[in-house]
Amino acid sequence: MEVYDALALDSINEIKILSDVRLIGCSNLSSFKSLQNLHVQFTLDGEMRGKITCFLCLDKHELNTTDKNYIFPLFVEAMNILVGKQVSQDKKLAAFKVQISPPRLSMISQKVSSASQPNIQHYELELSGHTFSILIEYNIEALS
Amino acid sequence: MNTNFSHEDLKVVVVDDSDFSRSLIIKMLKDANFTVVGEASSAKTALQVIKEKKPNVVITDIVMPEVSGIELTESINKNFDNTYVIVVSSLSQEHIVLEAIGAGAADFIAKPISENQLIDSLEKIMSQMKND
Image 1 (cartoon, rainbow over the protein chains, first blue to last red):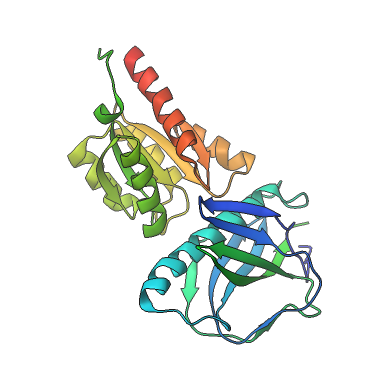
Image 2: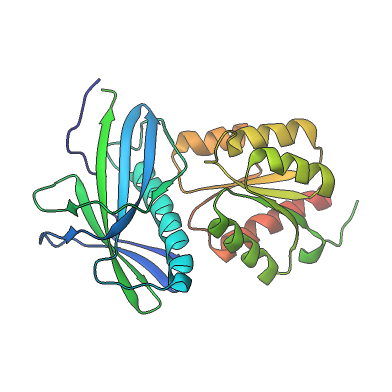
């Protein structure tokens, strides 16, 4: 088995999730750090194995219950679509047969930073005039 | 043979473990005047709903806990005549599309689903039903 320690899948420029919801890739190299977040994790199995963890960064946001009830499921679905598209379209990995688990959501914050982490991508989720930063960490190994 | 199908004549069941995704598909269907006769968050529940409601079309996600949408598609084709299946998934690798079609799916739609894609797929099935 060939192990890719710091493998990120090809970044996607933009996905329109709903008419008023867009997921946009951030190509700037400035680091981004989050202490307040929740995350959803996908487990990959098959010819490519590992975990993809997507953090919804809430450091600058105060959400009421109504906001949470709308944004959290939307975030999970947006990540489901993004990860599926990346696995399907990535130049290096599209040929691998892979199964993806259902998303597993955790409300426990973790310290996460994109600084010096080539296996972390930064996206922004734009919805209803609000923008949320999303960090995606890839820990994947593939059969050679 | 029924040659006068309209959108509202088509009975649809939606299967997805994501409440959000399921609600979104159901809203698209209702906005386009299709008749949603049932929904399910798992393949096991879906089989009960299909048995009871006898839909023309089942729209199912692939990635679900316990039983996948591919296995559900195989089961529908084996046990329910005249029920078409549309598979939807965020994964659109060639082998997955082929697996879905091989299991008996009438169509495959990659997420995010657009209303136009969904209507187009259902109208193709309606055309097929006219010929059945």
